[in-house]
Length: 179
Image 1 (cartoon, rainbow, N blue to C red):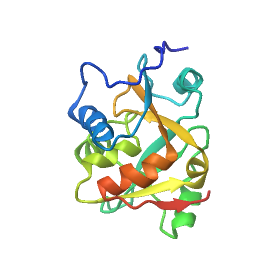
Image 2 (image 1 turned 90 degrees about the horizontal axis):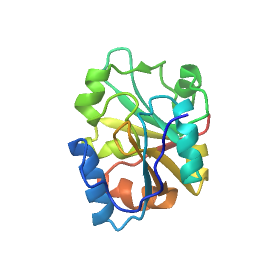
Image 3 (image 1 turned 180 degrees about the vertical axis):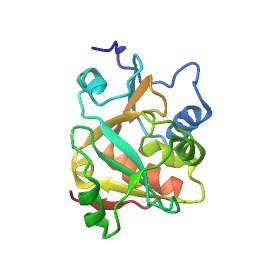
Image 4 (image 1 turned 90 degrees about the vertical axis):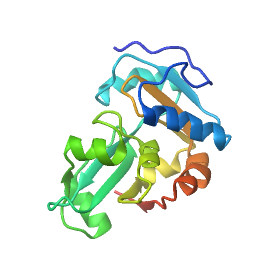
C-alpha cells in the first residue's frame, strides 16, 4: 500500500508543475474549500485505495479519449472503481467508438500525463477543445477525490462547488451521462 500524508487544507508549499499551481490559485480565488493529501506516486486505481481511506471519499478517475481521427476529444470523469467500456460510452453519447488519446496530446491539451488527469485539468483547456463528460455516479456523490494534476497529490472537493463554481469559471459545461 502506498504512503499517504495527513489531511491538509492549504496548498503545497512547492508546486510540481504550472497546472498544479494554477489549480490551487483558482480554488483560492473562488473560495472553494478543499482537503488534500500528499502521497507516493499513484498511477492506478488500486493505488487510490489508501487515498480514499485518508480522505474519506471515493476517487473519481478522468479518462482522456478521442475519436479515431484524433479531432474530437473528451475528458470523461467517472467513478474510480467503475470499469470503462468504450461501447457503453459511445452509446451514451450517440457517437462512434473512442479510444484513449495519445499521452503527448494529453500533455499538450490538458497539461497532464496519464495518471494525473482530473476534472481540474480543464483549466488548461481555455479554448474548450475538450468536451467534458461526467458520469452520473460522480454527480450523485456529495464529494470526490481526484489528482491535483500530479501523481503525488490528491484533493477532495465538494461536487456542488465543482459544478456550480469551478466549471463555470473554466467555461466548461459538462454533459452528464449514465452508464
